[in-house]
Image (cartoon, rainbow, N blue to C red; front, side, top):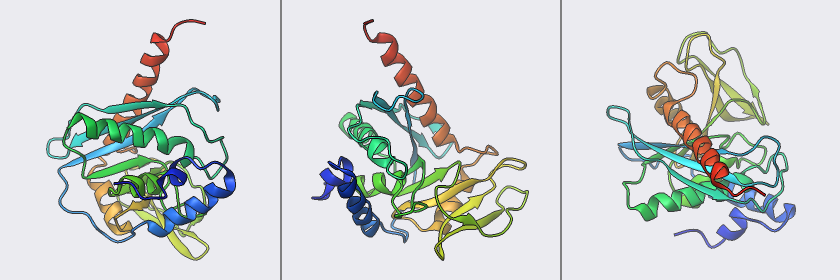
Length: 240
């Protein structure tokens, strides 16, 4: 069941309401572990045309059986975003499509993932409400944010060269993420709490699924599925 405020939490009518919604979602976010054993994880990502602020967003959830790293069929959804592009409020453009992809997965009756890796920020956000936190609270599922760059805060110290080396990301005196080396010689990724998981656990799980690549397999699968869905729908659209 979605929270009563989910309409504003998903598609607010204006920026002022969006700001309030982000603060409410951040308050609802759980930063301690409420996650059991996980057999299926999923990556979550979106695809859109470059510099197209009005066109559709295609979202994909790509489930993966952890034992054996066996991919399951992805779930996708296309949504026309109602919220304009505003830095710091990207979740209101991406979350509606990601929630629609989640609903597709639910309606299909497939086994639901126990944990989601979201390509984006979680608590590492000025109002502690990146898209990973927004999605996690809306569907009440453990989520981890995996970002390629920082939206707020600074890395406190040096990240060593070996896989597993890390350094905290600090914003206004609070540790909001961990800069994590997942592959020797590769630029670190930034792991943050999404929902229902602690930062230590999020980092540990991310490392366990890194397979010596900078970007985790669930995110790579979701990225490919979202791009494939966008191209397929664009190619099938009638010409103007």
